[in-house]
Image 1 (tube, rainbow, N blue to C red):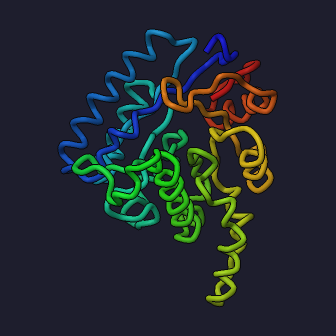
Image 2 (image 1 turned 135 degrees about the vertical axis):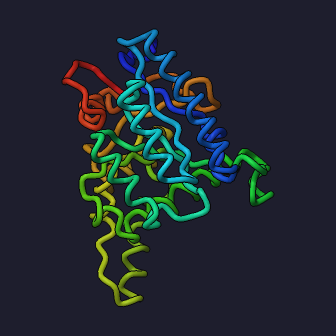
Image 3 (image 1 turned 30 degrees about the vertical axis):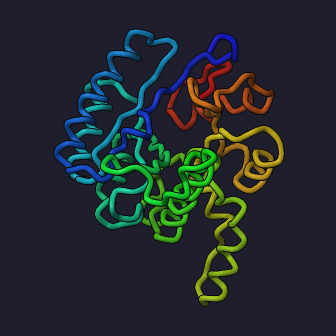
Length: 262
């Protein structure tokens, strides 16, 4: 963090532990242990670290209760979920959960997982060349954003602050295709504009991809993301990365502070 000039880092659960397919009771037990451990870690470094909560989304009611505990009792600053729990992210069963996120006045972060806690990859083709982390993640992120927008989540919950990892997968590249499909189906859609209802982390390789996503969703909807310890850990921060601190302050409900990044 010091080397990259990061003043404050938000820690998230490992996506390998989202466990979208395990029994709800087991998922809840794990989330409680994970959140207690997260709180212990970040409270030891209050000026440098913040933590987000793992949630048992198989049971939306339990997820509401655990999110409230994580925020009000443990001091965690956001919820953190995967992309597949056996139902789409626009399923009405999640409406009370999204409202709980709003009522607690915290953001919700989404990161994909390509395992469900029971088996590894559903598609064995993803086991080669690191495709699980490149294609698999982008696939899940794209489906998630499509469900959230086309499924009317932001129509029902306009105050929801939701951030998707890796620039939303392939969603910016496909945005105009979504509009074309809406026209073909004789439905109204301005998918490109709707993309600006979400937030996105900028954890993309520098250059054309990052520039393109920013041109579609707007720089004011981007926050800086890292993967410390992972295969794509950053080696440096750019002036663009550094400029996103003010967005992180806004998304995380932080008091303004110079050079705060996510």
